[in-house]
Length: 327
Image (tube, rainbow, N blue to C red):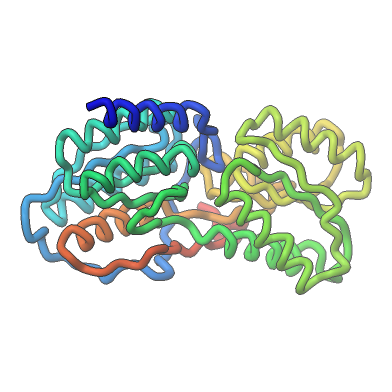
């Protein structure tokens, strides 16, 4: 018993210092657009071979992106005959830990996490593993040894943004660009890397002159953009790793009466609305597919429970939205 209490205390210590996750931050809206999974587990419409219960801890219900994931999970659960227990961590690491402990007590067959923090969730995965319960993650990876991680191919998304910039804005492959990143979140860092590395390889005369962090805070993104404009008066474009960053950047660019072009990332409804406006500075967005993430994660969980092998990482392909296909 003492040993168990010691383990729990250690887990709480790790979880309480966890940084809140999600590249977009809470309270924004998103648009679930259809795209294909790059490498999903084989679709199986057969019912689960036994009565299966899966516990799900969402990062938050305050973001439509995660609402769309939850809706997809529920629909897929009906198709497969699986019972879901869905909880909202509300971006609280200690709350998510408590939910994982409850799932273990309830003896669920698998746990799907949208971690509040990659490092902080490691001990949660270890607790579940000791109880012989497989853990899968969605959107945000865990540092723990999970069975499978399902997320947008974030690096590819960054590459798509860079390619779009060159093909549609800086066609002579010369100019200056900046990036507003979210350095606390691995997926967002991969978006940044995809963008900067594609530019470096394919358009080296386009200089990425500034990269600054907004930590998922739209107001901070506005301040970051203001600082960038003061430092780089001749900036041509900015790539924002989340739509809240793009919204903040847009406000500062307009206030400064500049013409810096914006490419965002998420496919949120408010971003698409901006893209559709005449002469908009927000010219494009890299769109995610939350429905495919949810469906794929639950299918992988059921396949794991039924003894099938699933891929360690499953990437859902992003795609570009601009005026030509914005709805």
